[in-house]
Length: 188
Image 1 (cartoon, rainbow, N blue to C red):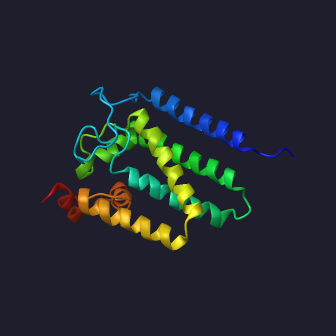
Image 2: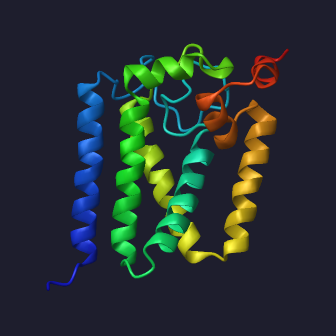
């Protein structure tokens, strides 16, 4: 059996990201924001630039995805090579990024208080969400578990406090949005 090299993994990873960008193009998502501007960071949660620029508050959630995918894949497949785990994690993240930009999911998000004008991600934002997941995956591989858990909790509390949203609230609201969360996120 041929040994898998870093080059092989990089080529497969590049192929996955290219597939992601291609499918998002077919779904009609723009390469960059409709404003034509490219910004490194968007801090205004209700801005039309949210999910359109390079990074935003939801970048923290994608880093947490990496933590979670690393932990889950390590637990489920302890003998799986690290490179394969990374590619599987990328496949899961890219699958979500594609699903997230389908009309059904975009409309489901629009029901939430903070995403009423949501139109999906720009391709550059979506691809960088995948890279953010990869950063979280590598961090979970390199740092102690207690640090990863502490950092994930800090990200959740920090983003929850600053923008009234985080990964936990996002998942909760996607499944069922309690009225008290809707009011809190709406500022009421």
